[in-house]
Length: 344
Ligand SMILES: Cc1ncc(COP(=O)(O)O)c(C=O)c1O
Picture 1 (cartoon, rainbow, N blue to C red):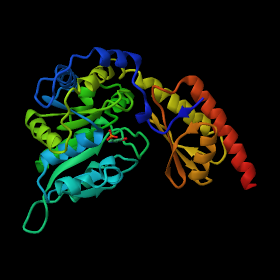
Picture 2 (tube, protein in one colour):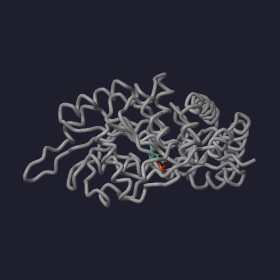
Picture 3 (cartoon, helix red, strand yellow):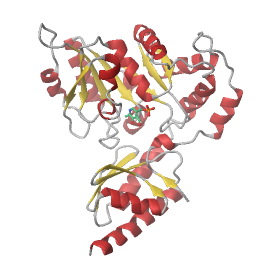
Picture 4 (tube, rainbow, N blue to C red):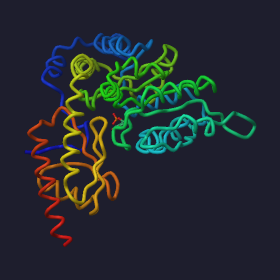
């Protein structure tokens, strides 16, 4: 039995999604008459309270077209040290948009609002001006950590005082909402725009929606086209996205519960120090090199990521059952004994 805890991106579309995809009414989205894409975009607006939305092929494109729409070449963009935009998007803000990223330290992915004014640059004959703050909630590399609303409101106050915009990388913003007992509208209230992934915890096969003001989204549409992200009968994908938004949000609480239980079980084992997960991502500090752990677990068909030389990442999602989680604990227990014997 394969147990795939590498990422929630591995989730397969549900049967309801496949049925909706088969039945989707289709048009041509580049020509502006794709009814199912339009239905998905309206649903995203309704849920988030934002004025407009655009369906994009990936979370990366959602982030990058937002950055492009907000900035001019040479601008400075504030972003947390290990944010996906900085760490995992191949330098796209510099390559595509000519902006400089000014990184901001954090405590487990959460920026202290007091630091922001010190990192913000005022445009002058010498300095680039800061025009945008990018946030990530939940934070991937920090281990699914939630930024609470008090912090989010403090970022808003900072942005308003400086006259800059806030974009949220909301690949897992629904996880942040569920973990705090909030709606997605409440979580997004302090930000101007958000890229929301449908293809991670929500299980759609492909796609994200970028939500924001009408003005931002029309600029983002032009950037999507420029980057080759204009899609034609994309209603076939949007149909799965609609099912994702209608049926897959509340169940994220199950992933959070399994992740927490798995972490508690692992904390009983020698040689491993798991984080206390807030959502669906567990980070585990290892005494032996993480590569050894990853290989040994893989031999038992339990798959995870070596995120750092001594850190493993396990991600919980719809395609991991309670039974598989129990089996995963057995496998980790067995491997911990084998590694302990090998090092004795
Ligand atoms: C926090 C975060 N943002 C953005 C992305 C990018 O999403 P995509 O793989 O759809 O480009 C990911 C992907 O894992 C992510 O974890």
